[in-house]
Length: 303
Image (cartoon, rainbow, N blue to C red; front, side, top):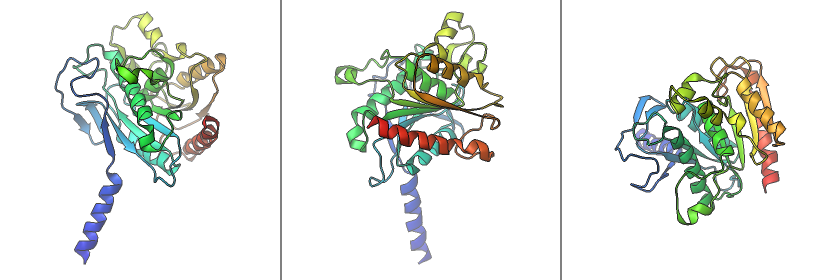
């Protein structure tokens, strides 16, 4: 009897943890690739430093509870690694409790030896992911006009990039060309924004290289790319963040206000670079309540 119960329990756990995996690019047609056959390297559990190919993992709420809204989660890691578990799966499971479908993106890192142009690969992957989810929205029971992004740290920089760069760099042909790459909204958590004076230097060097020109640094500092077409955005940051200075979020929000982009910014006095799903600070943990409320109101406006 105990053995039967154990087997059933193991099956139940497996069903909970198993998620649908999707590849972004057709075999042999991944843009910006030299064609190398790379292996996925997991430096330690939950932290990948090299991926074989970019992929999406779908986390879907029960159909009875599922809303039309979906979020693509972009893990951070300074463009050096992907914190896909803590910075990906944990957010996805939380969003599911709100009835929101979530897709965790493991994107190519700019440090990959396979890339022809290092700084373009992460952007190409998130653009491709947005197209893929929009094209298959009906399959997932979601709306193609309610697709947002959630990025943390360097993932926040990539979320800001895809929010503001309207040129489609995927090189996908046919009906793919008619699908927009711009998300409908963005959530930026402790985001890297500036790559100049207030940069997280590791993120800048990994994305642009050690000898990036001033023009390139300015181009990839996302506060300089905000326009009136930037989607609605909410930002969360801790004032005592030692890794990514809080001025990064402030610069982005100032640009939003200047360009009349609707959104909000919340700065907590503490929390360091650890604003996430499981926080030590009860004050910082309130970001989830604020974000959930913002998403509920946004859901009504996007319908």
